[in-house]
Picture (cartoon, rainbow, N blue to C red):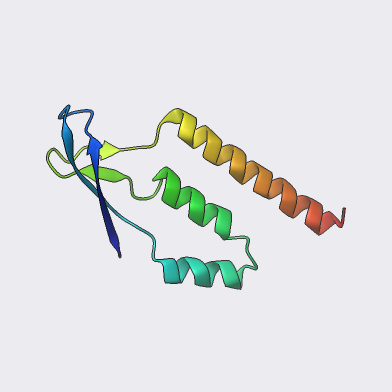
Amino acid sequence: MPIRQTQKRCRTCGRLTLHQKETFSAALGCLGTLLTAGLFLPFWLLADLAGIIRPWRCQACGRAYHMSVGGLLVSLVVLGLWALVIYFVVQGL
């Protein structure tokens, strides 16, 4: 799995520390999106951006850094809109 790193302010340490997370393979995400005719794309983006599957983790204390509630709500709204688009396309409207 590919690993991304960035500096974030840790809520436990109270200082800027190195955070890292394992990301979903772009090749597998593209393959899943192609095989499902684009239906996998919003789930892939939501899982990667919201950190649902693998959150950022502080390298000093090990605490997981999850997305804020507001960011998660925005992600869920985008996923809901994507579901509506798929519904209307399937219904032929």
